[in-house]
Length: 90
Image (cartoon, rainbow, N blue to C red; front, side, top):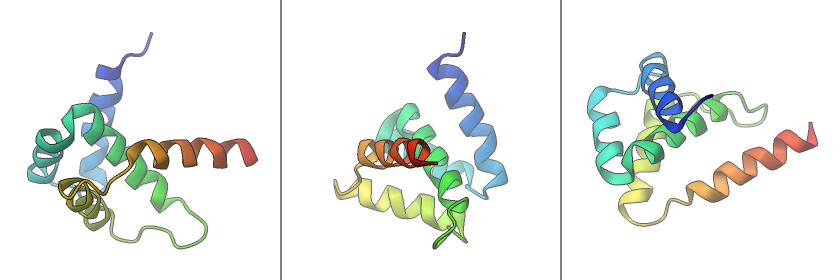
């Protein structure tokens, strides 16, 4: 069965394809924990798949999420639940 460790490892590997640096990943891990960093990678990738206003610069989007987190303005749970809701609608 899959575990959080599998999800984190997949996100860590995928971040390279999105142009997210090791430095940004490390900062995300220190700020949000490895699980939070992994969720931000997933949200970044899903943002690039949007039909309206897709993410064009994934690394910048990811770093923008970290900036919000730094100021306690990032609400990962709301973003994840929003994605789940959109999946239901499709």
